[in-house]
Image 1 (cartoon, rainbow, N blue to C red):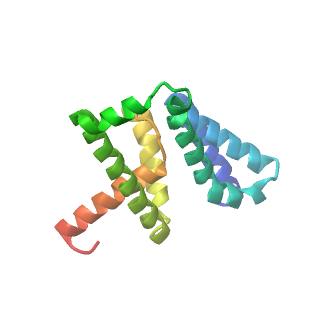
Image 2 (image 1 turned 30 degrees about the horizontal axis):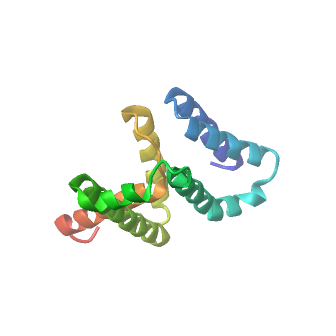
Image 3 (image 1 turned 135 degrees about the vertical axis):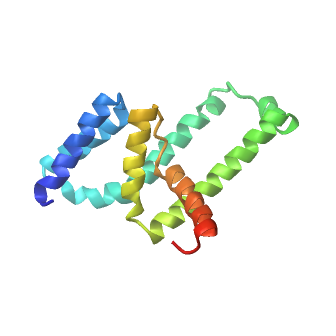
Length: 156
């Protein structure tokens, strides 16, 4: 694809993000394009390496704000352990974090799968109005689907 290939892909992602009303995809592609166009590409490895951590930090902070603002009390936390929706939510949270870990392991072993995850995420955003929450959950689900496919079809 050459040097301009990355620029064209980012422009395409910007257009897809606009058409699909995904501000996150549009903004991310715009920021990366600007970083590239003003010759700050030397920061791409840092963004790639630390961006996920930074994103997870802000996501976790956003989820914890109700504790800091005392919208969720200690009594509310205890109640989670005493009713079925709360217990199911605890189970869902535990399973999700486990799946995220499996997704991260899979991406370390087979990093080229990120292409499919990104395109699949864009497809989900644009065509089925999904919300991108990150590549780890997509990778975790992919790891599960690969495991199921291996059980059914043998070694892939």
